[in-house]
Image (cartoon, rainbow, N blue to C red; front, top):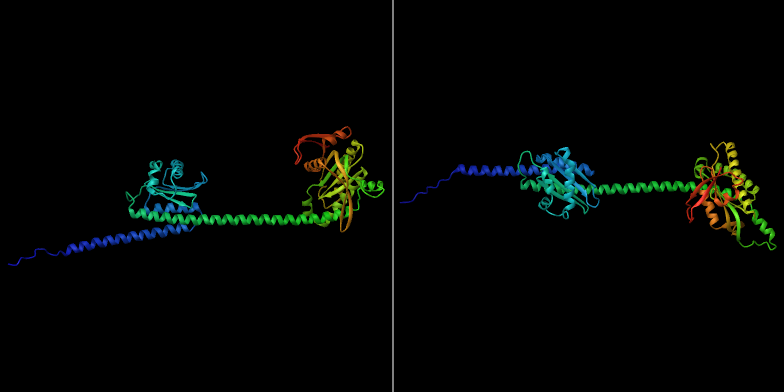
Length: 434
């Protein structure tokens, strides 16, 4: 008797298996479609901007929206500059946001280098637990910038699946690339701004150079016209020398006056070289008359001013000569200013005077155009006189204490106190001619 096979093929079981397999495939396809759509949506948002705050904000919102997350934060911190960073938080009570940020900051500053695992970071971020953070993703953007993405509970699911975690890690990697691009763009903008600042500075320097060149041209013209004024001390010394040679320099008591025109560069820019040249010549001619009338010698023209020596053997008289010259210069400047219509107000002549002992003597300058004698004074006396003159503004005349002591019984002065002067060791007491 032949045994019969009691096993029967059940077509319905095959159909169920196919159905299950089809559903699994469909689920995987849907998951892949979700992943691709999420990657595409978030990539468009984060790569569509070069502003770090905008990138972080869009990334957080897209992650929360695509995964149905109720709360989340993202922090990017510059670990080299404590307290400097970018922070975005959504879904938290307003009163908790500042505390959350401080907790995130503490997590980053207390963790190991940025290549650690997320689980390790989670262990070190216990302060985030009270905020309902369920997943933490650390990331870094270069050696200095460390970041954390923290995500809270979800609306439709209890946990994050392995596939979702992998997708979120992929998204964080894309975020890092976008942030690196933004940092590069910031560097380019900074470089462009630096170059623009350099160009502005260069343009300003060129403008100043042109103004100084115009000033030099005008002063050269003035110097040519002033060259006919030979210092009286030089001509007297030559007359006294039977051989025509100048005596060697020696220490003498004298008063030194420095005079300069305030706002000279602006005047050149406003009126032009020719007009300013005429104005300066008219003023300097009057100044020379006042200097000679008070026994002074023009030592040199320095820029837009004069250095004058008063060599009267009597100490009191050489100081009085200098002060009277200053008073005449100020009076004549006011008078001339009213007669020159191109000046909306008289020039301001600032003057400094110092008296005392200095090495004084003649010097000869030879050039292809010929020889020129001048009378020079050297020493701290001259330096202090120049520094006192530099203190004066608005047409003031300042005197040192030495000069003031010699003239105060005849000239009304105001004590301004002591001043620290450049390259002068001790404070200098300064008086103003009233």
